[in-house]
Image (cartoon, rainbow, N blue to C red; front, side, top):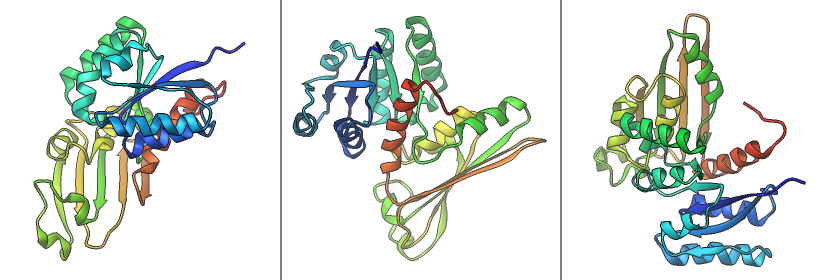
Length: 266
């Protein structure tokens, strides 16, 4: 008899809610969702109520420590890079694996290495989901072959850049490249906008070596994420357009299903 794994969700915004609804709909049949936490308590309560309507019980944790005390097998992190930096080591050190969306936290080599060592020491794992792109398998393979170079291109509309250091009203009428640099530099400038660049970097040539270009185009809606890697034998391009960020949450659902499946796509 298969023993169900337990999961908890930290972060009940749009992306965390999609994962909750997937569980409510029975799309995660190998898991029991036992707890939710949000710094906005009403969001966590709404998630639990949605599960209750589907006949599934779930505890609302008042703090992240309360969520950890449930000792889930997995925590789905759907909050922010800052939150992940605070939560990762305590979770990993008690043997709870992380399924992460805010991968920008791992742009910091020292923190990334500490998280890896903690997971190794306590039998836990860090799952870096594909988010709004993909192709991590071919990126990793091409990098392992040696001599690889990689670059990442992101296109957004100007409204998606409001509140960032690069935004000004001229972007509403003028298309231009608003950033060119490394993935490590990009995540410092856009801490919630380019998590996927750090994920692609960790799968390939590292945050200090992945070149990132971001373009703002008037009237553009959604995101284009294109990562390209080449070595002496391979040239691969992964090009994904998404109208919303929902694909990132669904990549969490896909990852959890893959973990539990007897057939694993890698």
